[in-house]
Every structure is written in C-alpha cells, then in structure tokens.
Length: 125
Image 1: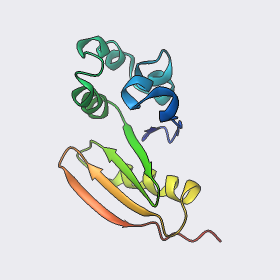
Image 2 (image 1 turned 90 degrees about the vertical axis):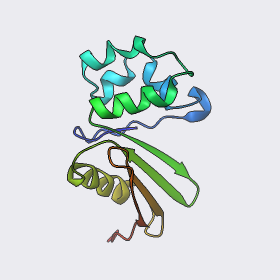
Image 3 (image 1 turned 180 degrees about the horizontal axis):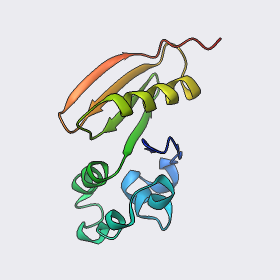
C-alpha cells in the first residue's frame, strides 16, 4: 500500500498478513501511511473479512491511499479519486523506483471504475 499524498510506500507481505485489510487493521499501520485518525476511528464500523471490500473502498475514499498489488509480469494500482493527477504522479514515482521498463500496469480509479492499461516504459538511465 502507498500513501498517495505522502509518497510513502509501505510493502505489505501478504504471506504474513493475508491481505491489505488485515494489514491496515494492525495497530499503527494505517497511521504510518497517513490515514487520518478520524478515519481510523471508524474502522470498527466494518466487520473484519465479511466487510472487506466495503472497508477497503471506504479507506481509499477517505484517505490519500492506493492499493498496489504485484501479479508477476504486471502490477495493479487501485485508488479512489476525482482527479487522476496526484495518483498518476505517485504511480510514476513508484514505477521508476521499483518496476522494470516492460512491466505491465493496470491502473484502476475506483471512483469512476476507469482502467488504464499500459507498460512502464521509463528510462532508467
């Protein structure tokens, strides 16, 4: 997961935590990403696992947060925003730092359910 406005990227080892919901609910993790305290206080409104999708959507709607998932040769970025500019800048920074030039990108703005599919063609020089 990455905090879009802070630029902070925190790797989540799914093998240890199971999924993003469980990791976010661990004490201190959401705060470390920049999720506002008023949003964290509302985590209890959602039942763990049963409300997983609603919970993740709520957090992404209320926070500058992006879910990043690797799938071998491609990476999915999910966020929820009215405008794409801040998210696209964060994705570009992430791609330049962590992805190879031929990695496929699947970018999903959940606010509009728009998908952008492309390749990470940045210059590493």
